[in-house]
Amino acid sequence: LGHGQIRGVSREQRRLVTTGEMLMWNASIICADEISTGLDAASTYSTMHKLSLLANFLGHTRVISLPQPSPQTFALFDEVIVLAQSYVIYEGPVAKVLPYFTNLGHTKPEQLDVADFL
Image 1 (cartoon, one colour):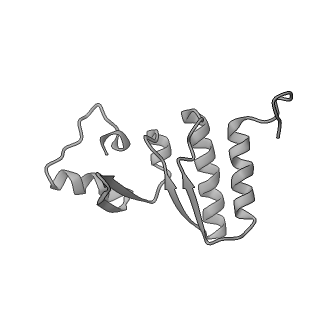
Image 2: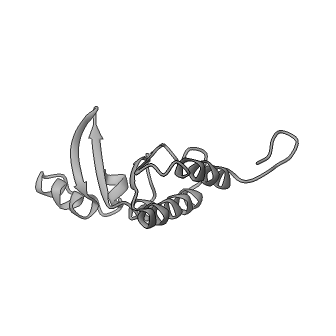
């Protein structure tokens, strides 16, 4: 994949190879901690999109820690767990997270997308 003398592949491609290696074990759960580290927003989206397609095809569950995802990347998630000071303050479908916080009196400012609001 490259080394100090030979460029090799991009970070995104390296990340996909690592993910492919993980999938070789055919585990039913795919865990990824801060999979976006070192990637720009477009590469993060591309990696997450490919991972989502593959996991859905294989019937795997994804558990992913992803700080500050772009709106496009956030839209790839089915469910979300929101933490505050190490406590779970929301767990459930992405489609219901905004109404949940609105009902608690926390209204999303217009200039923010949902992921930035959370």
